[in-house]
Length: 245
Image (tube, rainbow, N blue to C red):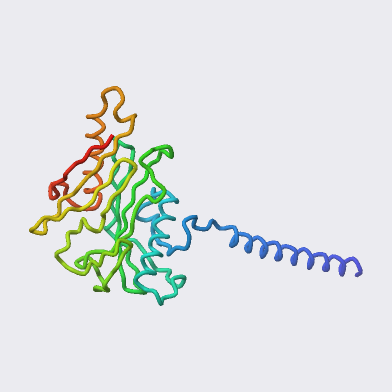
């Protein structure tokens, strides 16, 4: 009888030890989960469904930028309570430019709980040493009114744009566009038609061995690919180029 009682006590100790171990492991997993290196964020729930190849770093950057723009437009809301941000079905675009080994894309984000939507653009490369990569590889901006599914909310973004008028050209959602070698800004003419100013900055590697012309063509193609990835037609935008060396 003494042995049975002793065995039962040992079993209890083992069970308690196992439970405590699981509790400790669960607690450690919570605290050791990777935090967003860019700061506070609003998570976008369905990257895996629509953009499964988008790198984690790009996801972290977009989540942080989403938090920032939501805060600008909802200063009194507890941002941490928002957990239903998702990519709109059919809105994701990802184009690969083999000339510079870069992906360029965009997607629309819907947040039902606050009845707001935004548009995100991004670019990334599989090559970590690609000089076209930058730390902040994309933007999140206000969505044109015609694409809002919850109605207008007088949206404001980091560029102090208020996209509330139907006649604003959609490319304004993606400007300015910056990479290591390119800067694109808008230049509206008298009739309101948007043309673009594109500055191409050539490095020594771009001009070595008579490669200047090919390099300029490469960066012009990159600009066209970016416009297409934004869901727009490059032929709709006259571009004034400036080449810097």
